[in-house]
Length: 266
Image (cartoon, rainbow, N blue to C red; front, side, top):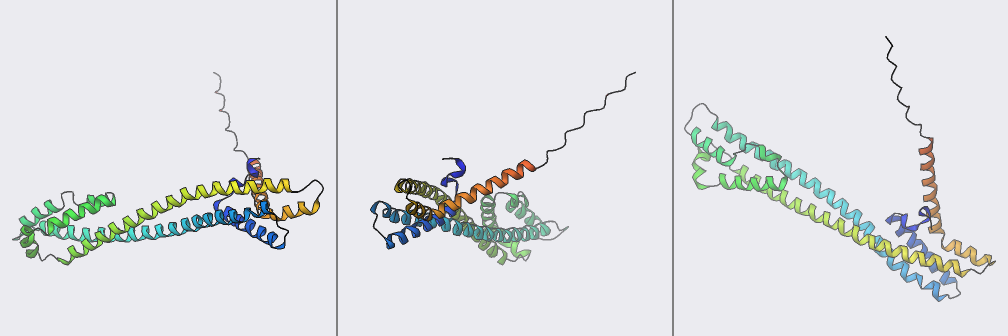
């Protein structure tokens, strides 16, 4: 069997659609009769394998959509973390930069303890950034720094908001990772279902090829009708491949580089 004529080359979604149509065609033939046990045995096999394929096609799509939603949620949470962290670092840095004041020295010490790298940590990998944020919160909530924060009228509600934002960020990252793993599961299990589909469809084709005695036009036409969903899809795939090959052949070649001019002789 040539590559272009191989059902294995069809997409997973196409395999699921074709499997369901083949199944329905066999159901209709069985209802009309006469009974043909060897052919009818393909009905439950196609139903089972098509259900598996449909599950992994829709499951992957749904999981991909969920992952995109979690990624958006993670981005929004990270923006909130960054914004609040900049507010807090900036506020303390401004108080530590006053030319004079009763809390300048303690504000400088607090800024050094809480933000030894300034805002550079905001460029870190998000899980590392969030871990640093939790350390900063621990420093700022330490009892020894309470007088300094009170003296510079620091808005303590910012710490609560930052903690909530970090928790939201961590949760969104965990959900995103879970969705990524689910996509991998669907890909892996879907490949197994596709291999099983190729086996069932291949055996069905071979049985139908051996079913029609030479010269029996009626059976040959019935076989063609039963396999039409598969044959039509393969024919379409071959036509698309041929059209692409034709376009590649017609694509003009890049002009050759001009040869360098000969240097004038003396």
